[in-house]
Length: 156
Image 1 (cartoon, rainbow, N blue to C red):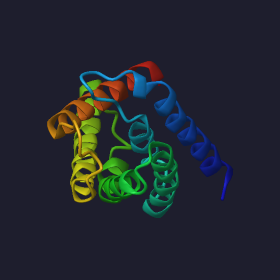
Image 2: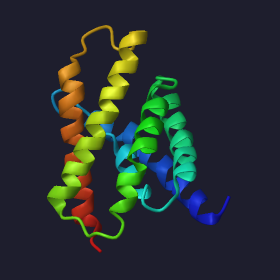
Image 3: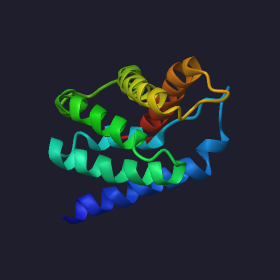
Image 4: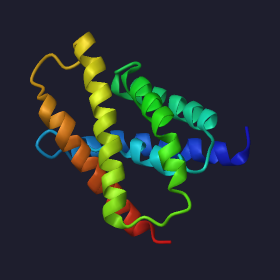
């Protein structure tokens, strides 16, 4: 394992910790963003598919352990990164605008939440007081908005 992968794992773990400590308390109509998904979409252009899937699995397992989902985030994030890797790696050469970044993150967050919602319906992870529409749409919009703001503040 090289230094770049270790550095990205540490940054990813810090994204998960920031999600637990900050973003879970900044809910908007019950929706919370997923900063780990934004980070994984960002590093998808740096690695090949196998390395990306392994990094995603490690970070999503840590996220599942902290949120007590045990496999739901891991499966949905790994599946999303496996299928979206070709599209994301092709965007490496092109310079995307803010609204294009917003749409890419929105699309990926929507599919991630759709996979997550489908899996959680089989095991009744959200059996009380949960609205799938809020989870699917508002979480995706919140994640895409946060990702677009991070892209703006990141600069060149």
